[in-house]
Length: 403
Ligand SMILES: CC(C)(COP(=O)(O)OP(=O)(O)OC[C@H]1O[C@@H](n2cnc3c(N)ncnc32)[C@H](O)[C@@H]1OP(=O)(O)O)[C@@H](O)C(=O)NCCC(=O)NCCS
Image (cartoon, rainbow, N blue to C red):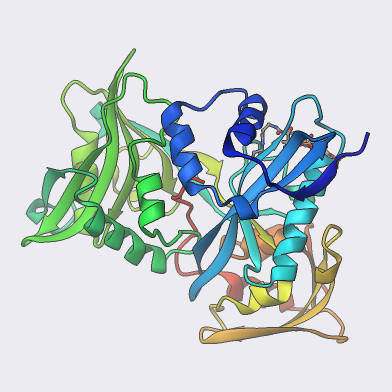
């Protein structure tokens, strides 16, 4: 029997039943409430069979940093197909409907998501656009190399909710210079920095907040929980600082707590100075994890929506099996001040699939590396190296918002 795809007009409670079945681990009441507050029902698309809900996808309207600015994007979430209906193409139909709608609406040229399983979304043209490091630092290996000014930084507890105006400002300022980060309005800040959203709070303290300050001015903050279950540890959820001294002071604090034998952080930026500052670089055992998956729903608008590290004039021969309007030759002219990207009949200098464009869209290195893996083809000598350099950002892209 075929499943029909359409707009969702049902209630949150019915959707929750599907999500609980699909994700195999029911959400806590607190999580349900937090998710419901974020849900934008008009963006939900569902599959149904005989009025039974069999699949769902939705997205949040978000503002994401890209090289040179910020763009409206669709943050895809709550993707789920009923376990009785998997592997018969429902996800494929939902993905196509969602991306087609983004293209037709014309406001959000890029879709992004975090994947429950990394093998799912490449086939729909999503590329892996950012990664981060999962680290655990034993207390015995907490020593950091000296950082000038770190001893002048005060670190003090604050109430996470009362401190939110200043912590949100620090977060959003950092987001401006880091592709892949999202602007947090009050709704997002209460979601990600709220008490409700943690999947597993067993044995955990409430969310703690410390502020770093220099000469009375707040220069950074960290959110974390402490846990004393089978072992005692510090579970870091975010660290943001305006300068290196404050960053180092916050980490000194997080790495050195009585009764707690180690400090873990699942989302350290891959270029975080902490990795260079630890005296014992082997200690954190960093493991690379996939971050943001990026899909150009509209190649022309997306590529024109960011800046480029160097002046670039190239024709990209783009393949896209899933969204036919993206396939073709695109003339990209860009530089540090901005870009245009129009369809053209000129021959291609570089052949690239939309998935690879998603992978480098935020500045993750690099198109040349993908070329070395046989995933990008150079047609004009030197064009791949030039395009690759131009796509790089000043800082590595980083995902710090769970959605
Ligand atoms: C992941 C999920 C949405 C897939 O839905 P589905 O309707 O079974 O997917 P489809 O039948 O449309 O599959 C499309 C393709 O993706 C593949 N695929 C889908 N889910 C996959 C998975 N988890 N692992 C590997 N391949 C997968 C299918 O084999 C198929 O491959 P093909 O194109 O080569 O034929 C569904 O299994 C689910 O809800 N899982 C639990 C919740 C979850 O993980 N959601 C995703 C949150 S990011």
